[in-house]
Length: 166
Image (cartoon, rainbow, N blue to C red; front, side, top):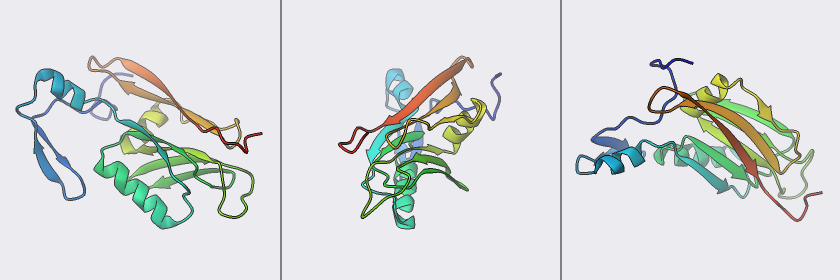
């Protein structure tokens, strides 16, 4: 895959960026080159969700990922039923694997949330979701480019070990 404007690459070295929902400008002009290089890395996080049952829970997740400039998030304790894939315009894609059916508040469940660039990296890698592991593991492959425009594959796994795991 050749480097193009549409390619997924880490953030460029800049002297500042806009952060958070209020889009506050953060001046980075006094950072060293190494500090600026650190800023351009892809941000991958993990989160115990304690349930993604309501629309508000998803909105909180989307807002948090946007304000923290997260590329991809591995999610645990989603408490969702079965296999799901949700596309949200302007945000990206969430893939989840859970028990066939939940009782009470729910338990288990994992997922991977990809913002727009992450979703593009997933599509560039073939849009494959490895979700045959049960309600405690899900994986995707992402294809990004390094600073030299070379393709770099990332295998992203979200795994959760719970007492109910059979």
